[in-house]
Length: 432
Image 1: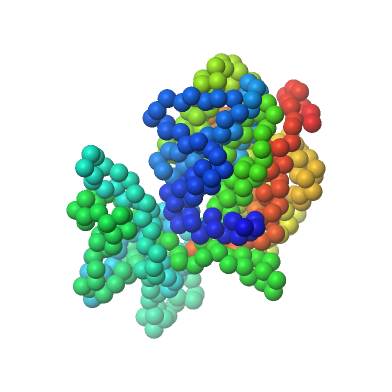
Image 2: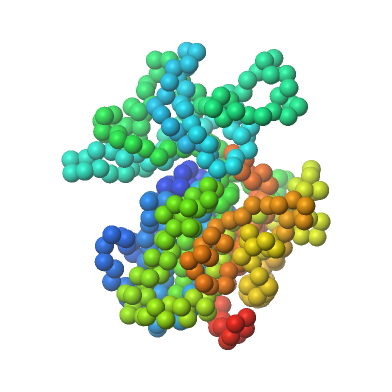
């Protein structure tokens, strides 16, 4: 499978954060990584390859050196995307069954209208010995959020304020249809409906990743932000091999789109706890970890905005990236991004050696932008960091657009990041 098809497969599989984490786990297992359990003791060995999950929606994988850990190369992304979370089993309205949902993250609401949708996530079921979480995905065109006809909404094309409680609720089927919990029970391994105790379910567009353009130069897919970065950095991690005396770490955290404040998010302790256990298991001290963090580099990989061909005025005229133009380094004077001159220069040199083009993104001075997981993860990690991504259009739409050539650029850049031996020779000084 070539690079772009592998990323398409990752995008298609990641219909929820739990499915994205499961797909990453499958790829890690196939590559020989041993799965660990946070609730059990760890016996790590030099040269070992491991991964661990938290909440079923966040993953950390690491490859240990054969010598004591002197530094780390860490690449982080996130598993979640703006969507609608399903609140209940459905209510009857006007001869139809309507599911009740609540918005998750800052999506473009209108992009969810009038397209085939389905339900994905996890259900928790009663078993003989307790409770168990199971993945569910209804692999069918199951739901739709219908627009209100223009005859009832004459101002719809003149600027419309959407009410998510009224306008954005999905229709499941006609009254008398098979009940939604019955469908979930069949998707959860055929359990009894009464054994479904709770769920974490979201809406998922049915569209699969597809190339567009006269020669397929672009592609469209749900969840490009941020599964494109997650999938490309994972591919680079699996291709990288050993990292000399550096521990190589790949992570996909959850809940970035709603602030990362969960235990599986960047403001949680997942990465810090995992690093604690790595150093403890290898017999290294807290001081060893502090020195290793100071000598490390962390990539926060989350997509950035390409210059929109219909609205170039929304981008900074000198710092606007384009699709298929290479990896984007994101900077912000107010520290919404972690990039500084040293981390940008070091990563830029790594990319130059790998023949990967690099672009720069900065917001217009009169238009504040968003932030991502890097500066939040920095609360618990003292390593130098930078924020990178790939340029895309329609961020936070139900279906987004990105450049096909950029997939290979990101894989090569991050693979080189993992493979290039460099050492910290003082604060702000690095040697290759």
